Amino acid sequence: MIETEPVIKRIRVERLECSACEIGRASGLGRGQFCPFIERRLPAGTAVFSAGDAADHVWFVRAGTVVLSREVGRGETRARAIRFAGSLVGLEALVSPVYADTATAATEVSLCGATSVGVDLWLGARGTPARTALEITLRASGADRPRESPGDGSAVARLARWLLDEGPRGVTLGVPRHVIADLLGMRAETLSRALGELARRGAIATTRTTLRIVDEERLADAAAAG
Amino acid sequence: MIETEPVIKRIRVERLECSACEIGRASGLGRGQFCPFIERRLPAGTAVFSAGDAADHVWFVRAGTVVLSREVGRGETRARAIRFAGSLVGLEALVSPVYADTATAATEVSLCGATSVGVDLWLGARGTPARTALEITLRASGADRPRESPGDGSAVARLARWLLDEGPRGVTLGVPRHVIADLLGMRAETLSRALGELARRGAIATTRTTLRIVDEERLADAAAAG
DNA sequence: CGGCAATTTGAACATTTTCAATACGGGTGG
DNA sequence: CCACCCGTATTGAAAATGTTCAAATTGCCG
Image (cartoon, each protein chain N blue to C red):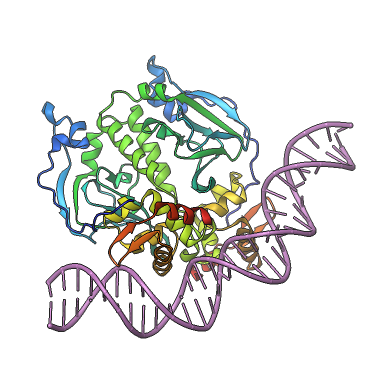
């Protein structure tokens, strides 16, 4: 029988030793080096950063919980992941001028923040294997869109949005339809019907294996509709 | 007017110069070093690796498209992301003994693979900032579950599954209900009803701010149901 | 102690899922 | 080069599921 503790609203973090922190250790704190991250506390509900903002800081979650959300259209945003103590958030600052996610403190949090410039220096020379792997990973996940679900808009709207920003690439590269359906959180049959609907409205032209965007404006209308 | 090319099924990659590759360059190919990655081609539809398998290789996508899927329950799997040329897949091998995703070639692909051991060496000393950041990132994203949607099971089943493997942590750490609802691809109202249903079945005990798993077996039944 | 925000509840409604059956298109073998 | 076959995509109609919107409740905080 699993028993959960009462929900934590206030966190108590006396004095987390930086030498006990993974980031602190990587910084070589014991060896006369310094850590670019500076602690800061935020109350529950505070926005740490917002998707689209200039990505100028990277944060390490020292205590508390941060929720990551991404836009799904019409300025609406949906939670897509949770980050607990020990995670880095906003690392996309390394590879993008703007944040991909909106980060919100779900509880009171203790965050250690550093400027992108500081992190850039901290990470060491560019082009090393570790750094290259990190950047490749960040670029890939920064471009991912969370799987969608019916609450994010009608099937037609979701498809229209997807086509507007991933379509030409994804469709061209031979991704099977059932995969697209999965990403959009719908069944293959529903995708098929949505494609048909957009074609009927003159937004796209499609055959069983081809897809062409005919009228971007109508597509945008469909995307906005709901 | 955006026009897509016909779907690509066969890829032509004559001889991609390794010195032109981001990975090759990071390996210091020009400087007498070597790259641990070895090219291999796979036809469309081939499984590169499967979630749960021993994570012994890391792959770099040189050409083609790879689909990443993750389990959503009952052994069913849903596509959650697409990786194009220039991405690394299976990097979770660095921080986990098993793959978190199932990777499938959507088109014919040219992949460069390296053993986890080789990549471990290639990345250089452990504990450096870049490597630490990479590992933290991989650990976090490896634990993420893709947002779910109604096609992945009924609201009650999705909630039950979530509670079984994320519940105690997420609930304890004060994640608001509407965030959980987002992650499960349902509205807050539906989550509320699903919680009520599980409580009625005696699987959990819940108040407006508390949640306790009372009977794991019933929860598992609900998770399997559909 | 009062007010606010989050959660719960209700009932009608719209949407998507289902489960079949059918049509294609591409790849294979002759 | 063409016919055949298999797997993928499409279509149909019924049914179930989740969404909506509004109102009531409750816990938390100042």
